[in-house]
Length: 454
Image (cartoon, rainbow, N blue to C red; front, side, top):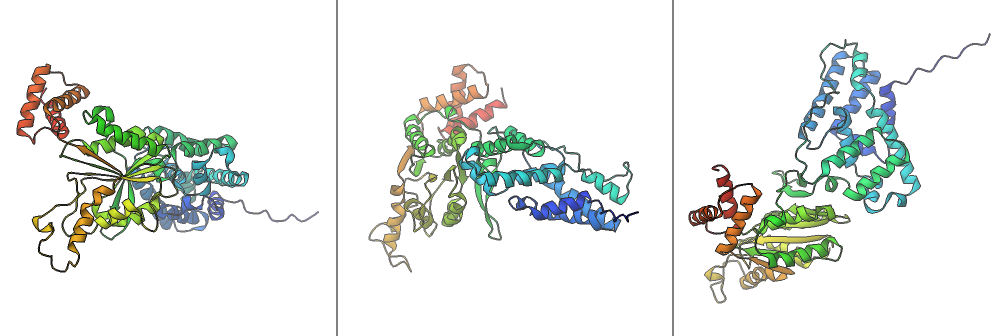
């Protein structure tokens, strides 16, 4: 009788998952963050750990990180806590397949790239479909009724879907979790081709933020002002020139930098935000930048170049004080430096001043030279000429009484306020008389006040 060779120990789910994560090439970044590393440590305990206390500690830390992350998300969840977290990581992952899918249809992607992505996605699906809570209970020999924070429960509530992105993103995550074969790859590639990948696929508006430690980044904005162009009354000719400029920009025909100046509350910034709501489906994105951060334009542009999307750098209420130097960053953006501004980026600034700086009497030619300023007149002239460097300059002056009343009547209609026309107009004029004069902002404030009284 022949001697039987010893059976090879069966590979555990944790050991298999660790092997998969270790062998990922294209999608290795999916598990390379703090939560991913915590998950790996948990898998290592499942595979070879002995201490129940260590297991409870690792499982608890993983659950806490997943729950905290879920609480911050504003998109509909798919699957359990662990599944949704790593599906989000997968959608956001920066890899060659996602980047190329944004630019070309699926059929134009190389067969080798498709093959690697398909194989690694299949392996990740294996990890995500494993019941890791059950594996943990089995390892630690806990009864099903023993309280353990559940990975299975996902009670997250999605926020408002301003741009209709949430439904598409949820559908993509569902296909990433359960889809198979070539049809799945086609769906994924088409999603990125239509929507974009990464943070620019997820958000339509951003803010350039700099922390106290000096770390700068683009912060995505979920709750964007829903203002639309048809609710902005007046300034039709001015907006016509702006819209023609944006139409050419999103159609890859180029666009001019724009300065919109005029009185406070005339709808300058509302017009820019309305552009995003009108053209986001054509690839337009809006990035709000403080005037004090204009000198960081090189860092900002680094995020935007080589992207398919079109970006408006939006500087609201732009003006410069006497001793400010950030105007040099604006000048470089408008004129270009050694590294030119990408063709998919334009600047739109709003200001209450035509020449962007405060002029003092001693700024005039022939005044006494400021201490330490050898060429002060040249500096002042350089600041004064900044507005001339915008390709398109648009003015929004205070509306006359007729336009002001039309704005108030339009907002009353939008908000469903029903008052006799004469009464509404009389109240609107009274409000303007005692509240900052006639402007679009004043009309909007009047309607907001009226909503609580009728």
